[in-house]
Structures are given as C-alpha cells and as structure tokens.
Length: 122
Image (cartoon, rainbow, N blue to C red):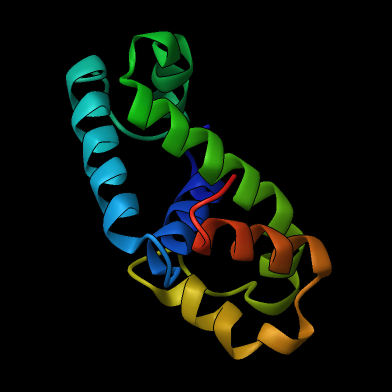
C-alpha cells in the first residue's frame, strides 16, 4: 500500500480544499503509526509497504481510514496521473499541481474521487 502510488494519493488528499486540516491530522497520525510499527525497517524495495500491510490492523483507526482513502484515490486517478503527469515526481504538491492543470481533462472517476475527498467523504 505504501509506495509511489500511495504517495501520489496522499499528496492529492492533502491538497484538496475541503477537510484539509482533518487530512493533515490523519496523515500525521499515520506517519507516527508507521514510524512506530516499522521503526527498524529500511526504506526501499517495498519494505515499508510490506511492513504497513503486515501491521495494518495494528495501526490506529484514523491511519487505517487515511490509507483506505488514499488507496481509493490512487486507484481512481492512477490512469490520469500516468497520462497527464508521467514525469512528475511525487514530492510536495507536484502531482496535485499537475492534475490541477489538467482538471478539465481528468477522467470522471478521478474527478468524482477528488470531489468526495474534498467533501470529506469516502
């Protein structure tokens, strides 16, 4: 779950206008949970992702909710990111900014997922 696709989804979640403070709080809770549960895991080659999967049930409910939302958003927007932002590295708000530049061209599933996140749903 925690890989480039998830990083993209996290950026999209954090960049949405609605419920931004709530998303930041969930992201922080999640980062703290992952640091605690995967403290000895060296990043790279999917090791953090595997650790998160192994310890998903041990993560706090806000973290679990955040990861589920991030995965749903990543899934809905993956093709759009690949089509419109193939060379954009998922750092900061780069992917979100790229998608915002292509807002009129995004697929309906991606637009819907982003709207649901912005509304605090999903």
